[in-house]
Image (spheres, each protein chain N blue to C red):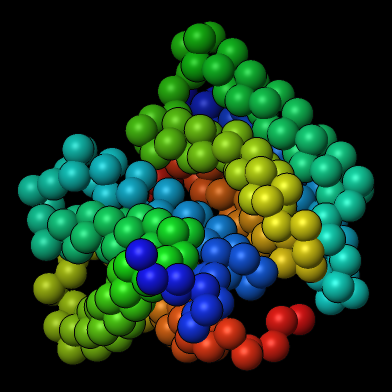
Length: 131
Length: 141
């Protein structure tokens, strides 16, 4: 049962990996923009939008799995991380819009560095600890 | 109302906004962690979980203080950053000296090592930022 659950983790597939990679690429892009004194550009907005779409898709996968009878190892933490994740690109976008300077790009960079960590924590809370 | 902008630069623009963003991230992280710990397993390590809750509250108030930017906001942010620095260093030392005091991790355990030592760096950056915005002559980049 646990083996099946961990093998079928809805948040451990290609989509989760793509989210992490996209977030890191966006962090690098924003860092370059910040270093070059550039305010957040269209690439950052589109990137945050894509991240949001990917995270919503990930959320859908997780919800489908839960409705289908699967259980996260730590449900409370799992859904806490999931809700936080979905809010992160939005938070970055809003704050970046408020700060049309290099520091706006720095904010996008910071959030995009935190996001992969949260994805990894999300994956850990799905799997039962000590399995 | 005295015009505070004449003597101090706003704390909620430029690098300050980045600082606020990081404070918001930590406020979210610490709040949800503390809420979950207190709700599900408070009896295991009440001191550690209450400390998490206090840390969470301080992050929230610090973010609000920086964002408000006025004279009162600066005072609040100054107090929060100071308490944070004392807290993270104090808990870091205590968790090294007597690990049994904090049987479960908090944001500040091991000088914030579980969070990439950012809890240790954040109050220092906050204090530096408050210091550098105290006069209007500070150079903007």
